Length: 359
Length: 142
Image (cartoon, rainbow over all chains, first blue to last red):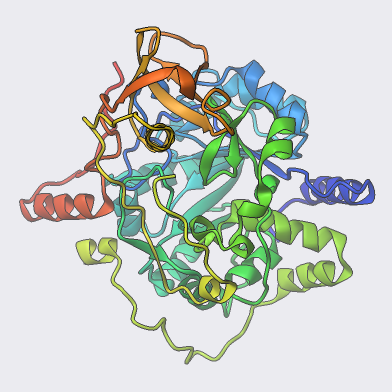
């Protein structure tokens, strides 16, 4: 388990407190997007396709603090855009640390090394560095040769300075399981605290793309990647969520578990779908037709989604509020998930464009 | 949303091998007719999905170039509204469907031409030409 005890305790007590008070809809992680501007131009990105006047806008530190205080989530993930381009990101981070929030600052790390001296290591602050795989795969994924090397430089410097560092990767159709496993070895060798991973999702606001992994294919990929796990691999995620990805558990989406707040307001219904915005967390909770979302709803926009922002809250809540879930969480922390090496590859695999291009 | 939703059964969801990616119709330059309530609702829904600025022509005669980031469809046009950002204002602004006389998709579609497949093709071409340090760069904001 890569997550520090103090963080686990904070989350566990928060979940239990809500459970005991009968509150069924509460956020675990606030996805705080202080800006959409980015210094990468990844093809297919669904987060940065806006006119210049929108990309120039950003949340003020006060708006960030108000959102954090209003929803009360113990964890705050700061994605974007690239948060390190926000001129007041240090003030935002320091303000959240003062509020004892566990922060995951998601960065492509292109400017991480340069900006690190402005931050102070803290148990509350983790740099979550976007790395989608081994060098060629990552560079192709972020549409920038040399992106991997810059990110790794940033990671190593952050580790050296005593910061908490994780990597986060998104895997799309055609991802090579063996390459992913080698990638896990590489990042653990860099000294990171743990790995975060997720299957890709077809954002509606993203440029057109041909297809994404359906659930059956996603489960096979993660079964291959996460079976016969090495002891050296640490995951900064719920073991139950990883079992969900492997097809060993069935969970429903908890879209309010990771709400997104950005320059438009509180995004409805979740971090991935944009069906409109509410002006407050309270309004979001009260006016969103939650029954219309999630795999159980049959909504085709949710059909291929197994993404952590919707399903990891479910896994965490299961782990801390049921005996079976807790037992599974403890067991999953230490299991290697041994399977025979002859596990068949996915049926009719399609070559990932990135693999074709770099081979 | 711009794709008509067909509900899936749980079995269909769980056995899905490939999920279709989003295929968005090119709307840049489109000037929809807003003669009926259905046309108004449909066009403003598309404006909400559009990845660029549009021009709202208000019944007051004002032309508003804006990015529509929200729409709320109520029981009547007067109770339905869009919310938007204008380039020259920090405020979130709002217009009722009933106050909108015209709509033009005037701004550039910011996602057009940025398909993953386009990048792969361009990358291969540039690589074959011996180029190094190949990258896509964000557009200048100023």
